[in-house]
Length: 264
Length: 327
Image (tube, rainbow over the protein chains, first blue to last red):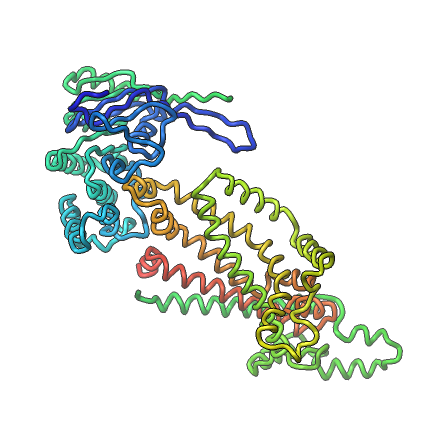
């Protein structure tokens, strides 16, 4: 069992995807090969690795969007997280900010509705309180009140990423998993989003798990870097060790993705 | 919702051009077809050639095509849509009764098909890979691979062997002593087999479309985000996923509406339903050209109205389309 200051711990996670129909021979691909992971409360951790090494699958498993074939995920030193039907409470503790900001927001809802939806589900606020909370969250995420009635297709990439962050915060999570949050954003917008995330972390005592290819901007803010390869976490690097971080960055840039499939 | 009048005017004018084009093409193709309504009379030695010629003159069949087209346009303006040689009456009242019969059949079939396909498709996509999903997939593929004609003949065979359903028509021959309730039961009884045949031919397409669209949407990151927020599966399906499927489904629904007067022609002929199908077939065989043109024009009008209605529904349902239209 993990120690008491541990927010999240995963033990020996294995996840296999099967491709093919019920009438054909299936091809199985092992995305996670026994992942061990622990994240302390308030930490900022990066998960890096080449494309297809299993980073997003791990994030999905941690968030409960995928059920691992075997292994355990612990939260708060005792709660076994994901059984057959994870509860609303366990789900909202971990929120995900997706890579594709356009696909991550419901195109039929207004920005205010998108941010408000997680609060509506929790039924902890009245309608007027929800509206106030939505306006506050939008303001805190750097979104103008004039955007409330707009829809995602009417916003810029940076604005959409702010909406995604505001929506994630509306669920009052403890761990925010950010899957390539700076993809498609220019350098100045990346810096603004990163600063916003740092401010929000301090305000809400959030724990961050960044999933990224690019450590150039993140390395200044990270506590630890976990390196993933072929479905396993193969090493852990302290962000204070600059030479190792630089070497790691070069290696990520050079190495191709590497999944291995096998027919059964 | 601010309505874009320019858009509507543009679509209506396009529709008028389409109708005009179809009417011209119908006249040209029927002119190119060999023979006319009085062809058989000419082969009968008991009918003098002068009689045939005078009949053709009386019905303006000896006039050049543009003159006949202009006269047909005049009759359209009078609301007659030409004259049926076989029935000896204007085409419009003849088609009106048959079109209503066809609409009773296709309207029931469209309503039933959509009422079954949407919930079943949504549920099938939600429970992908489940027994129900597999049964639906196998069932729809089998029915799709079966020709409509074979389905209709199979149902007729069932009716013949069991005697549970009538073999054709819209009502029983003797109706004088029937009350309203008995008449309704009799109509439903006659409607049952043609509706089943039509539903079987249209349901698989709609069901597969709903399922595929729903599967696409359910894989979207924003649906995964909704699940992550702990939103109940029913709300994820009906508040988040289904509205995102509306656009392609409206397009398909508009095609269902567009084919209201043309989708059932074959089934009507096979199952002796007194709709437009048998009328069109008889008119084609007898070269009753104005009836053929009338049915074709009515089907085209339904097509145009269905597509226009679909576009208006899309305009009303999707704020992005309104936004693009206003830009």
